[in-house]
Amino acid sequence: MSLPFRTFVRNFSTSGLKKNAIKNVTIIGGGLMGAGIAQVAASTGHSVVMVDQNTDILNKSKANIEKSLQRVVKKKYAEDPKAGEAFLSQVLGNLALETDAATSVKKADLVIEAIVENLKIKQELFKNLDMAAPASTIFASNTSSIPIKEIAVATERADRFGGLHYFNPVPMMKLLEVIRIPQTSDETFDKLLAFGKAMGKVTVNCKDTPGFIVNRLLVPYMMEAVRMVERGEATPKDVDTAMKLGAGYPMGPFELTDYVGLDTCKFIIDGWHEKYPDHPLFAPSPLLNKYVAEGKLGNKVGEGFYKSKK
Ligand SMILES: CCCCCCCCCCCCCC(=O)CC(=O)SCCNC(=O)CCNC(=O)[C@H](O)C(C)(C)COP(=O)(O)OP(=O)(O)OC[C@H]1O[C@@H](n2cnc3c(N)ncnc32)[C@H](O)[C@@H]1OP(=O)(O)O
Ligand SMILES: NC(=O)C1=CN([C@@H]2O[C@H](COP(=O)(O)OP(=O)(O)OC[C@H]3O[C@@H](n4cnc5c(N)ncnc54)[C@H](O)[C@@H]3O)[C@@H](O)[C@H]2O)C=CC1
Image (tube, rainbow, N blue to C red; front, side, top):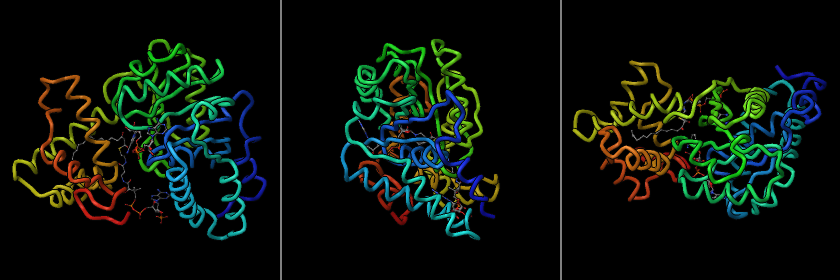
């Protein structure tokens, strides 16, 4: 059922946010995750600037956001298409695009980084943002596997630094891991938790431990799946069918790898292998490496372990 217009305005206009709450959010990276975070932040009344390397990428990201919003609107406003249209234009009105990261943070209460999973590149970005952003701006990374403290050292604001780890697809996945490092102030952490809740997410508090909570458990499971196939014990299709029908997972590990992106999965495993070279779990996977070398990066390019629609 659609919402009465007054409730809709309260939920989705920036004036509906609590005093002192985070309102202006800059999201760096408009890929799979950045676009999803931008969509949900804008849908919950935040004023959002989404940044990427060029306007072509940004326009594709915006088109993906619109496609996803159409799915949400079709469902939520099935009985009131006019309210659906108003919601759509309000959300898109909350979203600005920018290619210059330094300009994008001038008014930001919060910056969420969702760029490639590479420590040096993330550090370089935050070092520059630290000089450009107001002192009061809170920084957060959406990294899947890099310790937050290793990214935060690039800045002079470790007390205003934390992790916000979202799950893919962001509009559908309810969980948000909120990570603090020892230097994160209580005020910063409370603001990050409140922001997560304002986005409609269920938050869990995490320490800055490898993989936080979900990936600490998910990565070993997925690596065991790929080793099983490498040993010739099962096909990807059979593993996926088994885990969906036998363990109740919405996607099997190979479908999920295609969904996450094989390049991102490889960045995660390579990073942990470099850090823990003797740990057999993180030894390179020849099968994953082969697919990545062939450019089969998953759903985003139309092919990974499976062929898919782009
Ligand atoms: C094996 C190789 C090993 C390689 C090494 C591995 C290394 C480690 C990798 C670790 C990766 C870590 C990544 C990370 O940091 C954390 C993550 O994000 S992990 C991923 C978490 N996500 C999941 O587990 C997703 C599981 N899947 C699902 O929950 C569902 O399949 C999904 C909701 C995605 C889709 O549902 P499904 O029923 O399958 O399909 P439908 O298309 O019918 O959709 C249902 C419903 O949902 C709506 N919808 C779906 N997507 C969107 C969207 N993007 N925007 C808006 N709406 C969406 C759709 O409209 C449907 O609505 P209805 O009302 O039901 O029609
Ligand atoms: N793919 C997934 O399922 C999940 C990924 N993550 C994490 O989120 C981050 C992003 O992952 P994805 O969105 O999947 O990657 P992606 O490859 O889809 O998107 C990354 C985007 O960042 C842009 N970018 C790269 N360097 C940039 C820079 N210096 N300035 C501005 N933009 C830049 C790229 O052009 C690209 O559009 C990674 O840290 C990843 O580990 C976290 C949860 C789930």
